[in-house]
Image: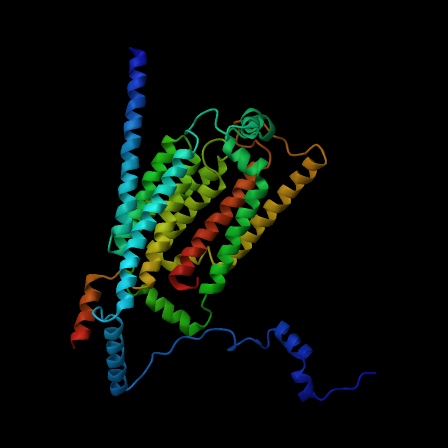
Length: 320
Length: 104
C-alpha cells in the first residue's frame, strides 16, 4: 500500500509536473527558455556622453594610422591578400571548367547505361511521356519523398522560429506589417482579380499534366504558392484566412505526405517482391496514365504550395 | 535553300544565347556592386528570369518553369519581405517624417 504523500510535496515531484505539463496546465519551460522582447535601453544624458566620448577615443586610438604600425601592416596585407585570393579563386574555377567534358557530347560520362535505360525503357516501365517526371517520381521517388519532407520540416522550423503567440505581440506585428502598406490598393486588387484565377489554373495544369509535358508537382506547387501570395497581398490576411490557415496547412501537408509515403511504400513493396501491381499504367499520353505518378505529383504540389505560402506569411508577420 | 535556312536559325539561336549569357554576367556583377539592397533584389530577379530563358534554350522546360516560379517569383518576394522587416525599404514620406522628427 502506498503511503499518501502530502499535497505540497507531491506538487514538487517530477511525475506531478510531467502530468501537469501533459494536461497543459503548466509549462515548465515558460519564461526560462524563451527570449523575451528586448526593452529599449535607458541611460542618463551624462552617461551617454561619457560612453560616446570613450568610444570616440577608442576609435581614434585604434585607427591612428600614423602611430599604429600593426594596422598599417594588416591593411596592406589585407589588400594584397584579397586580390590574390580572388585571382586564385578565378583561376581555379576556370581551370576546373576547362577540365569539364564538352557540353552535350555523346561520349560524356553522363551518358552511361543508367541514362540509356531511362530513355529506352522509361516510357514502357513508368508510363510517363515526360521522362523527367518518370525519373523523379518513379525511379527516384524515394529522393523526392525526402525532398518533400525536407520542405515540410523547413516550414515547421520557420513556424517554430517566427511564430508569435501572445495577443499583444500579434497586434504589434500587425501594426508593423501594415505601416508601409497601402490598404485596399485598387490597382493591385484589380490586377489580382484578373491574374489570380489564371495563375491557379496554370499551376493546377502543370501539376496534373506533369507526366505528359514539362512540369510536375514542384513547379506547379510553386506557381500556386505564388498565386496565393499575390492574392494575400491584394486582399489581406482576413480574406485568405477564410480558406487557408496554419491549421489547414499542417493538416493538408500531413495528409499529402502520408498519402505519398503510403503510395510509394506500396509500389516499393510490390516492386521489391516482384508482385504484380494492381495500379495499371494506362495508355501513355492519357491524363489517367502512368500509375501512381499523378497522385504523387498532386501530393508534392500541395506540400510545395502550402510551404511557399507559409514562408511568406511567417516572414511577414509571424502568424496567420 | 532549305538547308541554308536551318543553319541560319541555329546561328540565330547561338547569338541569342550569347547575348543572354552576357546579360547573366552583367546581372551578376551589377547585383554585387549595387548599393541599394532593393536594386540588388530586382537585379537578382532579372537574373533568374534570364536563367529560365536559358533553361528553355537548353531544352529543359521543367527547370525553366521551376526557375521562373521559385527564383524569380517566391524568392524575390521573400527578399522583399525581409528588406521591409529590416526597414531597408522606405517610402519618401516616411523618410521625410523621420527627418523632421530628428530635426525637432
